[in-house]
Image (cartoon, rainbow, N blue to C red):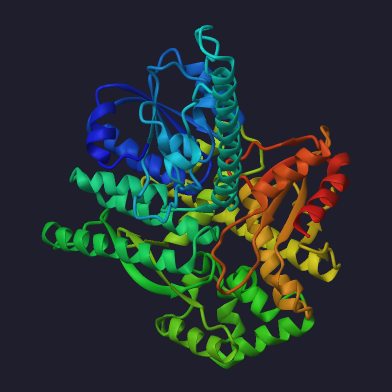
Length: 566
């Protein structure tokens, strides 16, 4: 059931209890977790934190802890499946689910006792009405043998005929209701999409309780920026939510002006700004950032010689010397840096890049360190999906969580270095896929498969990295192809997952169009295709549009998918 008052129906209930936090492996979930941890610290709430990267880990964590805990908080996992069916909990167990995945499972919505959904109510949820989905099992087999034998045979027969007609009518009504129910549920569950960021929902809770610190506001900003970087929400939704956060930032800055007239060395300031849509440019060279940002790389078509020429022309148009552009951004001449955004934007408009500036926030720690919200997202994602093995599975999660605290700048800088490697790897893979024509049209969708032995292929066995690669590849392919029909197609991308076990990881992403509503139909399509061909698949990820599949089942699975979507 939906929680209307987060403070009374959620926080006040768990503040005196021991709580188990189950947190998904994405940056928005980490930010929501940091906000909740800060609140728990204020009120001395006892909790245990368990990172979960998929449904199997969620089930295992629940089974391990269900005897010690009665209160479970799930962040960015659990809303889009029937939790009670999967976990089979005792009746005195309660789940508080803060999850941006949509659509929300109808059983979770209408369960009044054990499942409480912490969801922003103004999201367009479109949940079907209770009576359309559930109905009481009426006892249709009515006892018809209690009639007295004394009545006339003709009377008996008439009554019996009436009962048969009535029963037939009831059965027909039930069949019609079930057909309508299937139709309603299909329409409701057909597309997967994302609602308001969980970090923003948690920040709202902190704000209602007047415990919202500057750090919490920053984590809410990073959570929203993660949704934008991963392309999970529409531009309209992003701009609306940025507006909400901007009001909070103004309020905080106004409040802090009184406290900090003299800037202390460890103070923290958040500022709203129209920044360049260039990945990590303040921690890289401008040239590297232009080459490794999907928007500029796809617009220039940098995988071709012609594209490289266009980039040189672009730099010449701005009047920036190559020597300046190729050195670290921090070392560029101050005179150039002062008007850089205006210069770049002016030239970008001439080269057809109208959206090179984006509304975002930046943060200053003391005098020296400045980061934009997207820098933090790239760094934290890279730490979480670091493929260089260091200790147990949860090490990456803990490092990523730590990098969000302002006291751990060394971890953040390590994340930024990993993020640069990741962006370079993505860009090189996109270039090689396009130059070697690896993206092929399968009819209803485009398909691309990375072969074992491709450089950096290990990185793309991780879900977020593979999704970023797929989105960058589709954007670049749309810019490079002359075929108008192909520009409107979605993409299915596969990469080797585990060579020893012979599995691949596969992701489906919606078409790259201006008016895209970011709704993804591949989750349901993958399920149906796997069912109809008995393919050995594992739907373990919280995103339904990512699956694992046995390599030898891939061709029959794809054939079924083509038939299904044609």
